[in-house]
Each structure stands twice: as C-alpha cells, then as structure tokens.
Image (cartoon, rainbow, N blue to C red; front, top):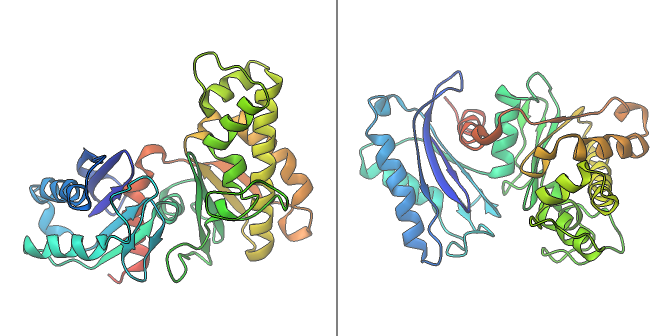
Length: 307
C-alpha cells in the first residue's frame, strides 16, 4: 500500500511486486484549512484503497511526503501544506489502518527519498549500486542509494542536495543558508533570476516559460539555465566525490525541459568532476515520471521494512 502526499494532491495505490498499480486514487490537498481537514483527505484515500478486493493482500504501507520530514518521529512539516507542522502522519495512518482491522508495518519517507527508491527499483538508477537521485522542481530535493541500499539517514533527509551551498557569497536561501542549490536551480529561482536580468516573458513567467525562451535562443533565458546547470553540476560532483556515486538521476518539472537543462549540467560537470574516480559520472533523466511518488513510497517500504 502506497500513499503519496504533496501540496497539490494526496494519492494512493496498491502496488504489486512488479511495480504495477491497482486501485489508484487521489484527492486534492485541502488548502486554507486545518490539520484535520488535510488528514481527512488521507483517510478518504485509505478508504478507497480498502474497497479493493486486493486490500487483504497488502503486506506493508509506505508513505511518501513532501518535506521537511522527520522519520525518526514519523512527522512531517511540508513547506507547501501550511496546516501540517510536525504532524504525526505515520502514527495517524497506522491508526486509520488499525481502525479498519488492518495492522501493517508502516514507513515514512520524504518525497526525494521515495523518488530515489523508485528510480533504483524500476527506473534510471536500476542496476547501479551507488546513485544520487534528484527532484528539480519548485524546490530541489534528492536521495541516495549506497551499496544497493536506500540511505535516508537518521531523520530521513540524507541526500537533500538542494541545500548544499555552491555559492559562498550567494543570496540567502529560504532555509537560512547562503548560496544553496535550490536558491539557484529550482524552477522558482530560474524564473526569478531571468526576470531580474531583464527577460520579458511572453505570458508565461515560470521556469517552463524560461525554458521555451531558451530553446528559441533568448540569451537571458539560456544564461538562466546555464547558471542553474552549473549549480547542479557542482553539487552533483561534490556528492559523487564524497560517497562515490556513479550516476545522477534527475526528475521533476524543471528536468522536463530536457537538454535545455541537461546540456549545461553535463558541460559544467566535466570541469567539477575532475578526479579519476568521478570522471565517468553520468547524469540522466528520471524514467518514472508522475508515478514515481507512489512507486517510490512502495519501494521505500520494501527497502526499509522487513518482509
């Protein structure tokens, strides 16, 4: 059983051992409300799943959530779900399952870690013993596979590459640090920088609009993606040097711009990944798309919980 909690939707599915999904369902994430109203949407998703004929065969429950998360406590404080601060989502889901007569071992994973588990199981990192997987979207997150094991860290935040500082004198990040990857390479940051440099959007003042302008040859838009690619390349190289990953998988909305993002990452990576043991580091697009959250929640449950 998998639940994927984000700022836009709360989704659920029963995930089979081959990664296919049954009884997929979703609810919009309530906005402008309290914590219990958001939990009510999660409860509705669980109720939908419990109506499936396959419900009795579920053996584990994985919960993937936007962060920050604290898996040591089973709590979440998603930036984009203001009603939840240190909300005990893992205990609440477990209690809801128990109320339905189903007591499953349950695990919580941040969305970056869940995406990493998914891509290692069935996606672009499959077959790689050591991998960094990233989500580049409104924010920048990630996770690590080390020695074929998911490595979430004590609180579930290991691999959170978005808050590696790559600009010593960079602007202050929302996290409180300076020059973080997220403050340069997130979709929000790309659009903000392009606008500040004089880029004139043709109606779409988002990273997607900047990407379209870059593809059309706009010099400011191209510079915005080059700047983002350089920040990502520096962080990827630093991570690979530290833990010897041999592949970086990148998904998320900004990654949908394709070579507009990947070409500058690869170009700058050649300069940053200079040591012999990281020279062969590859950067590739994620393979699982919008299914990564649910597949990742299930994969995290498989990797982190006993059978």
